[in-house]
Length: 291
Image (cartoon, rainbow, N blue to C red; front, top):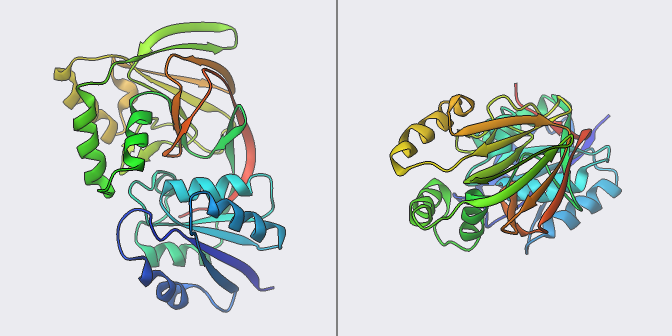
């Protein structure tokens, strides 16, 4: 039976020329298996409406073409439906796509859809919001908010903002309650991880697994500037859990109290409440993955 797939393209995400993608879809998608259409987003959150309409119309697959923000919009809309999420990474970080071993090359990512390698992945609920990969409540939330309006995209844009903001950043105070055990401390990063990385190979929680029914809370404690190179090195070498400045806690449900009420969910900045209830939602999203 032929399947219906909708490609939702964010023309503003990440880097590169999005006008090449329709031709690549026509060339590399298995047209003997799929009937497809393409819809472009026109404004923020438009992807949610397009994905919702596709799921309600019986599409078998909805493919987010863009960065982690585009994947967040489309993927969170498909939670709890029978429609599968596919990803063609075309953004700045592509964290979830990298975790799911989806090729970064657009043509190869489209070919990956043809293989129909699907899993049921966990998702995360924080109060009334959902996310797929990672959420952050510290320095990364500040960078996400700045990057959202920054003119320079891609990895260079991130690096520029990190160096610009780091020296004036003050750690936030958090209180964490996991199974009645309360921990209060200052942090540079407080990340809730379902998947392993922010993007570009920066692995915040190297052992996270989107199918294990649990989450990781990754804490980066205050450190001196002299320790920064070794900490960054560990993140890119996927050994951040070995640093004396990091602590990683596994959990299914947690409560967090924040002194600063900003966050990012899958790289998208949000204003949040000071008190957060975090929980894993097991096997709640059908997603196509790489080999």
